[in-house]
Length: 376
Image (cartoon, rainbow, N blue to C red):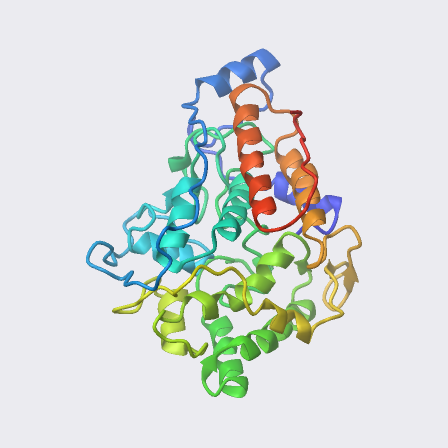
């Protein structure tokens, strides 16, 4: 989505349905003094530091008596991420689908054994774009008043359904945003997963299938989506999500690396752990992604510039081998685009969360120079 300034603007100015104050009302048009007073009146929650790694990273039962599946209630939020949907349905996250970054990091570790630095990077990069930094809350689905009064526009606080940071084109089981619904389970997409699993994995989803399916999904979107884009940061999550089901949706007692398709449907569509499901043994991030990228060694980030089949390389986007460019562009372009001139508690909250994001990049081994868009 970050293929050009125009696309940055689409993210920053994403239209939202405006309802009664204070839920969605914009603070635009106020004087600086009025704006500072309005932001200060919101219930500011200073962001606490993220949790560290689990002390016990062994395989263990996670579909247990303390975390039973419960169906959605009216107003509950679910979105494009099957892992977060499942965690909310089992109470590892608040069941209404509105959570803090600390709750999100804790839940993905407890429920799936996601590696700590990877979990922190995913959570804080997503939260900074889609969450409310003042109230410290984010929806894992659509925009909701449960995250509190919005900061001033162009910030959107629109939840994980927002196209195209974590959610984005070429999803395995969700349609591209151009076609309407980018967050609900899509049976046609899932049948592609089934077909490729039968062709390359003897009916199971594995790393070989992941590579072939990822290649197909990219080619399919280029050919059918006139607004297709696959650039940073979505580029990174698209390739990582290809191996995520293998690393986290296989029972921790099973070391075959072969994901049963009924189990896959349990997560992708039904948003529930299979019965007697154990999380994997040992924390992990994106193991196996090299198998996917090796099938497309010459792929460069880009977008359809003039309709279908006009894929154009975007030289400004970070490639998969440029994590620091991803970090610099994300902070200097994406975050600054949403929060061009924050003050007071909003600036304080953004700086704290940006610090947590940077610490995650360091912990992941990326030797990036820290940037300070709002000063030290």
